[in-house]
Image (cartoon, rainbow, N blue to C red; front, top):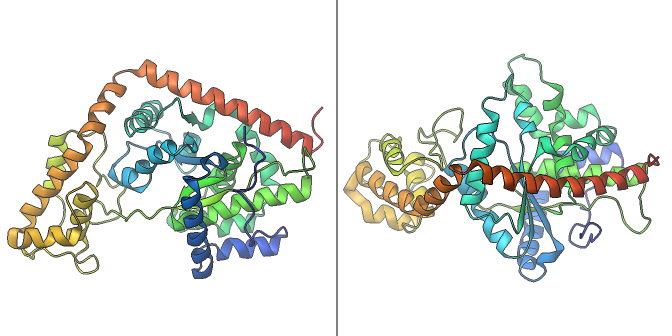
Length: 384
C-alpha cells in the first residue's frame, strides 16, 4: 500500500492551517489565478501518469440518484478505463449515502446501485484492477466524519459552492445537516483511502481544497501516527477538459428534467429521443455554440461519438436541416454505444456477479479504511 508516499500529493501553497487563511483559500479556489495554477498542475500530473503511475491512487464517485446518461459518460466515465489501463490504482465510489443528503427518500436505491455497477463495468472498468465500493458498506470511512467536523467551521461550510447553491434553491426549506456537511463527507471519501488524485471539473475545486484543508488541519491539531509522515496524503485535481453537453431540451442535462439519453437505452429509444431534440428554425446548419447552442450541442455529441469535427459536420450538412443533423447524430450515438450497451445488457442480467464485484470492492475498501482509522486513533491518542 502506498499510503505514505506523499510525493505526488504535496500540499497546495494555499492550504493554510489557520481558519482565516483557509477560508480565504476556499474562496479563492476558483478565481482566475488559482484556476490557472490548478490547470498547470493538472497538466504536470497528466504527463507524469505515464511515467510514474504507481505514485497515484485515483478516486472518483457517482451518486446513484438515477440511471447514468451520456452526460455522465462524456463528463467522467469515459476516462475511467484509460486511467486504469495506465496503471493508476483506480477507486470508484458508489455514493449511496449522498443520495439522502437533500432528499426525503432514496427511491429505488438498490436497483440504481446495481444499474450503476453495470454501467461502470460496461465502460471498461476491470474489477481485477480497480476497486468499486459503496459508501454505506465502509463504516470506518464514515467514522472519519466526527474528527473531520471538529476541523471546520459553520461559516466555511456555508461558503462551499454546492452548499450555497442548495441554500439558494431551497426557497426557505430547511437544509439537512447531512447536506450542510456534504463537503466534509466528500473529504472523508477522498482521504480515507489515501487518494491523491481526483478527476474534477473546475467548479468542484472548492471540494478538493476543503479536503486538503482538513488533512492539513488534522496534521497540525492532532499530529501523526508515525512522525515521518502525515496520516493523510494531500489530494490533487486532474481537471476534466470534457465539453459541457446540454440536455435534449437545450437546458442543463439532468436526470430530474428527463432530458437525457441513458446508457441503458436501446437504439430505437435513442432515435425517438433525438428526433424530439430541440434545435431552431434556421434550416442551414452552422456550428455556433453561442448563437445556436442547441444545434451546436447535437454537432458536439455527434463529434464525441466519432462523426468528425463539429465545424466540418456542420459544413457537410449545410442546408440538410435539423432532420439530417438528428439522423447523423443518432447514427453516431448508436454506433458508438452499441458495444457498451451489449456488454451492459449481459451484466445487468447477472445480478449475482454485480453483487460479487461490489462485495469484493467493499472488502478492500474496508481493509484500507480500518488501517486509516487506526492511524487516526493513534494520532489522536485514542488507540485504547
